[in-house]
Length: 292
Image 1: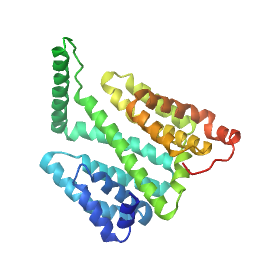
Image 2: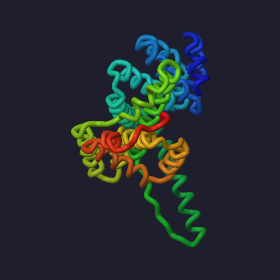
Image 3: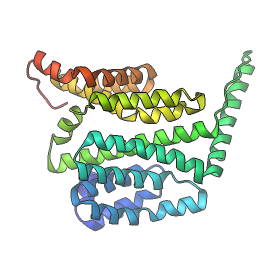
């Protein structure tokens, strides 16, 4: 992965070629988004925005041809988050910007892409119907709840917000690997929110969820930064204990596959706002080896 960043930063045309080449592909647009983020962080906002304008040409064709705004939103959202990080030099504030990207994506789908949402809804309904048929063939009568367009819009928004944040983190990792080795690791492990900000995120998530089942996917959007704070806590603990990278691999497998692990990480992130686990660990643990 570092080789991609090195190639992109050789010249403006190398970055342009890579950014445009992957921008029209659902499979590779995340690489283009990360390159836009890297250029913005390293070369400045002006250079990043200029590159973004070229990279958005193919995604615009996808929108007008197929109605798919995914690559366009990913490139635009990642670049905007990179602008925030470049301007504020605050990863915590930038992740809050990811909440705005996710919410605006969901709202944009509801307002501007109702036909596309209906297509997605039809796919979900067909998939659920096939599951019910499989249960029926096994002798079980099961009726599964059909999602609404509002739920799907919230789900798509949350997914896009998460994707933009991940692409930005990849860009920040590339920048650190090329120009400041170890800098991103230290920055990420220190990620933490003050109690007031954490309380606001939790209250918004609870309030939105209380509006009804259809709004629960929207509640996920408000808690996106807490997921990354939880991951930062795990990385900090592994680094302080001098544990091997295998622990992180095992943790991420559990995090991806088990929803209770995700919830537990968010709970730790909330509690960390008040207790500051890393400060307590630093006072209780001997110096660690490695940079996990």
